[in-house]
Amino acid sequence: KKPGLDELLAWLDEQHIPMAVASSSRMDVILRNLDNWGMRSYFSVLASGQQVTRSKPDPEIFLLAAEKLGVAPGHALVLEDSYNGVRAGAAGGFVTVMVPDLLPADDEMRRLYTAECASLHEVRRMLEEGRL
Image 1 (cartoon, rainbow, N blue to C red):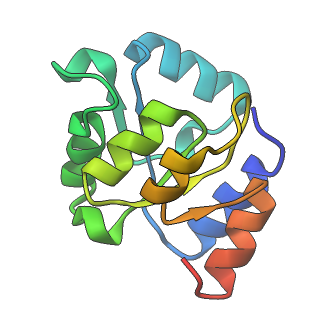
Image 2 (cartoon, one colour):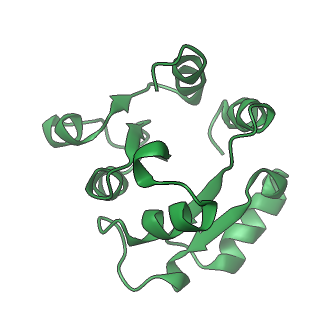
């Protein structure tokens, strides 16, 4: 679990912003992780790799999650730490924010993403300031 995730989720929940998990993992793994972290209640939509035929960098899983949330991709924020996730968010027309983890952003990522944030704390600050 990333530092700042609890605070970001609580803030988004306070703002009544619906949230989804869109993960290539199996649904049982997603549920186990969310339950272990005490975070399942934040997410109204869960999309797993079992529900799509194409994986990231194809945007299918993000498009499925947005459809289930009832929101257009251009009004949905994708938070990603992987290159293929950023590629998928950009390909789907999402507001795509990279929070690098193992791999730093490269020139390709900088061309694709909407913004890069060093941490989830920075994501929250940018949202609060209306910059995302």
